[in-house]
Image 1 (spheres, rainbow, N blue to C red):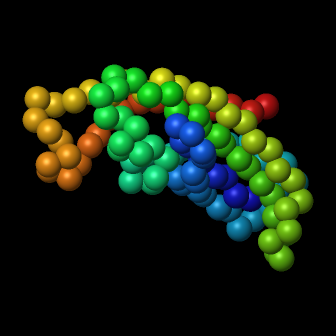
Image 2 (image 1 turned 90 degrees about the vertical axis):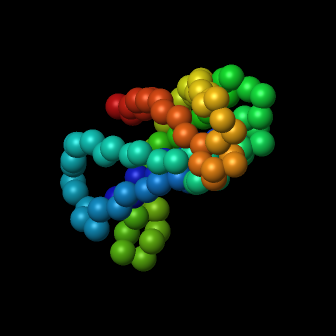
Length: 109
């Protein structure tokens, strides 16, 4: 079973994933992801220039594969969130780092 998280302001980029080597007849549980959208390529730093907010689409995909990698089942769910851009009084790009925070919950039943 593979869970992938993709995000982006235009096209979606896979920014994180988790994989379980076991196949269950039924299962439930949760997976938590924390990722850097800039470093992962989901958001371009140039898209943030002069902006105070940017809309980001998040998509979670779960798929079940057999031992040959053939997809037996797949489900995706997506949502969008507005990310607020906070700037320090100095130009953070001069120091090689931009940061922010946010939270988004995506569920599929």
